[in-house]
Amino acid sequence: MKMTLHARVLNLSPFKIFFTVGLGLLLGIVHTASTSAKELPLKVAVVGVLNRVVLIGGETTGWMVQLNREQEILGNATLEIDVDPKDQSIERFREKRVKITGDVMTRIGRERGNYPVIELETIQFLHPEKE
Image 1 (cartoon, rainbow, N blue to C red):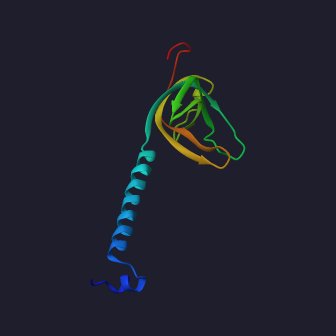
Image 2: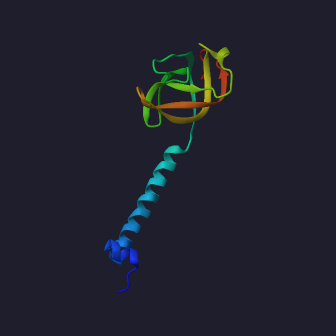
Image 3: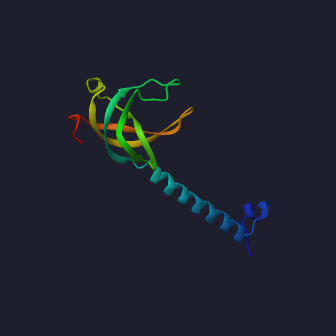
């Protein structure tokens, strides 16, 4: 059986080379698929009261919605979620009941670990009793 110079130097058989390359490709495909699924934005709509927040360490967007009831977001039940207003001014909605829609992304903080954030698309006032 004829081997290339690199295979002879490393003393690798064609089977070992094939197995190593195949395993590497398979792991790359699995990693890409799992990473892509996590990075896909999840569209959500939440209803609650928008509040300003300050956390030590700065692991916040500065805005949080206190939800009316527990809601599952990214697999975890929560009563609050950070809101990233991006370039929108949302101060006039402060301490008001609102409906917010947007993409949920995961951010990573040193103190908080992974936490969900809604990247704001729309925000609207709601009557205190309407959902």
